Picture 1 (cartoon, rainbow, N blue to C red):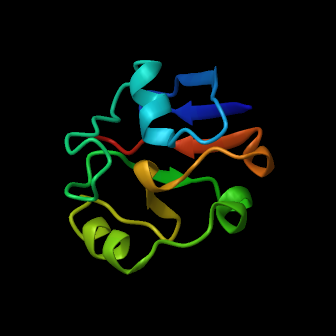
Picture 2: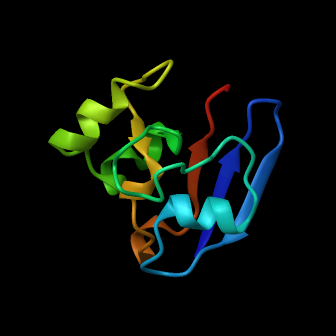
Length: 103
């Protein structure tokens, strides 16, 4: 499946992502600037914070309670903010667009 990360400077990175892989893992594997994933996907930081394109928000689901609390650590939180470690690639997300926040 394809995922596009829009970077703060206007660039975009589009890469193939394996089903079952978290979008944080995919971003790290493809050197997407701005996605750090310090905790390795353990919900202990917010360094994989992304904004889900509003058209894709329903398909990505909503943040669970602990993820929601961790998103409070994000510098600028939006309605479509998610931790990319909590979004798993699946066929319904083919073509997904994520925006990487400014650092």
